[in-house]
Image 1 (cartoon, rainbow, N blue to C red):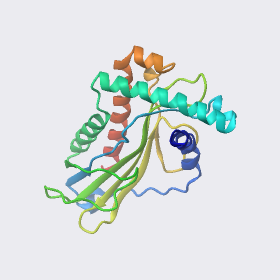
Image 2 (tube, rainbow, N blue to C red; image 1 turned 120 degrees about the horizontal axis):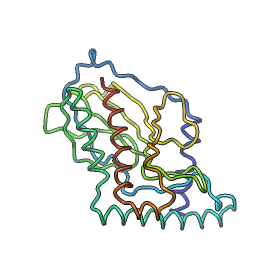
Image 3 (cartoon, rainbow, N blue to C red; image 1 turned 60 degrees about the vertical axis):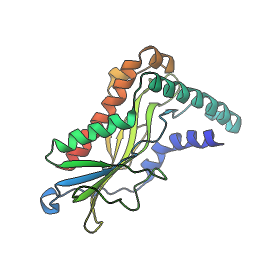
Image 4 (cartoon, rainbow, N blue to C red; image 1 turned 30 degrees about the vertical axis):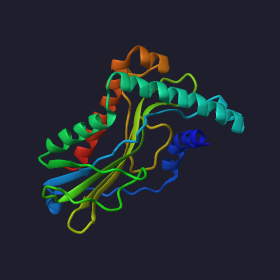
Length: 234
């Protein structure tokens, strides 16, 4: 049942965000007076999802879901092994790209060693070893490679929620959501980024045959999202 829930989490994501009423909160840099930012870690889930929004198995009820669960588990295991073999660390890559993009906008950013109990914003923020004006809370609901259906190219994707919280009074200074390679409709106000077609793959076999391009594709997704986060802080 654990694998089934993961499949429906991925399949339902596009429709969920498409139905929600979402109102972003823009950042007013001049009024906020933010210079020093701390960012909690543990941004990405432990495992990359290799998900398909529509599959043959999804048309055959519980039995089909079980078949899909096995297939998805196999895909994810192979991609995980690919990352481990090539010593690729998605969390470190994404964190580094956010740090660089934010600091290029004139902020200082320190990363806090935190762990999330769930894929959501932190309820409280740990004390920072350095002076801090605000916490940049970024959480990825999921990431990996996505396909809209059978025979459709697989491309990197990541869905993120971003919030800037005042260290002084915990007020929300900025709030937004960013989806790289959205599958299906999204709610108005959510920022979407189209996937770069050069990082498309026919299947997991193609990713394993060209691991450098697969990892570079995820790095490109992380960089595009990081640049978008930094732009929101301008």
